[in-house]
Amino acid sequence: MQPASETRRHRGRGLSIRLLLAAAVSISAACGSDTDSKATSDPSIDLSQLDVGKYATKPRDLGVPNSQDLARFLEAERLGNAMPLPNEIDPGLKFGVEEPHAFLDTKNSHLSPIFHWLHEETFAEAAKNYISGFTSSGQSDKIYNLSYRLVNTVLLFTDENSARDAAAALSQSEFYGDGPVDPVPLDNHPNSVGRWQPSQQTLVSWTPSGRYVLITIASHRENVVTGASDLPFLSTLVQKAIDTTATKLESYKPSPPDKLMTIPVDIDNMRGRAVKRPDGDSFENVPGVYDAHGALTFMEDIEAVAKMYSDYGVDRVAFDGTRLFRTRDAESARKMFEHIATPERMTHTTDSPKGLPVAKCFEYRGPEPYMRFSCYLHYDRFVAESGSQQLVDAQQRISAQYAILVNSK
Image (tube, rainbow, N blue to C red; front, side, top):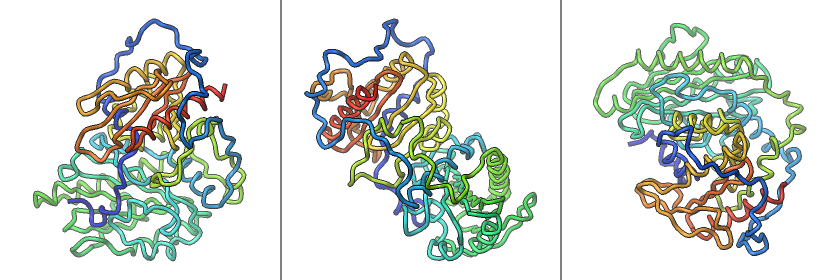
């Protein structure tokens, strides 16, 4: 059983099941051949013969935001780069949770994960002068019923007074789930409001901190299943999350609200090099570019992927119609590709795209709601990943991705 409104969450996992499975295997620093990687296109590949379907093959110049909503989403993504990972708060929180991360309000984006536990109807009225927010979630076991979970959310406001007022108003939100909700003090945080729902083993706190409101949810599902109760454990976890998050945010300077429309959409031309996400794809997590730290909030096995990023020097990740990883250099990209583009227990090799033998494609045959097909390639210092429920679509995306990278030179 999941949180009270968890049924609203899944629309299918993202692209990176192959990445996660491969990262779970230990990485040898000495792996790979001695062959020099090519920074130019393979002369045997004729771009005009690739099947790219409806996808563009030229890099894009994304310029500056064309709407306030886009500008607000971009600010949320920048905020995500500054937030702590779950395992930085508690080493036991090893597993990320697939759900929306950057979000706006309850009408203009997918619902934040906080609304699995809290009613959303009064959010807009309570959160005056709210800009955007970001959530990073982790749990102690891959199986929800065997875990405790932390949902760490930061809301950004235009000014400190608005954040303080919103924290007080939002703390009155009704809880989903049966059972009474009791106020509880947080010993080290007298400015925080804490509320405890024993029947769901869930503690929620609201903390104003400068222009931010920190909403921290700690829930112990295993205790619900076994009939145990441990408020002191959850209180310690919540307070550690508040301390760690507030400290991390001290070094982050949010953008002036009146400048949001002037900040470029792209970072280092990463999204411009990625395939554009088509209409019809899930936008539960909006397109964006993250540094290696921020990108880890999207990963299920946080520690394993962090090691892989470190080993191959991944410093930027673009999430769009494909995922594009920028590594240290061309040799690192080749090694990362060889590491992740190998068959695993539940993934099987399938056909490469027409005219693109340097790409590798796989079919997932397992019980999880992952993308069925995925394709991979490397070019120069980039590794690319496409995913789809249809093989042809995954092949077309990775073919278009190859063409974009070649045309970006």
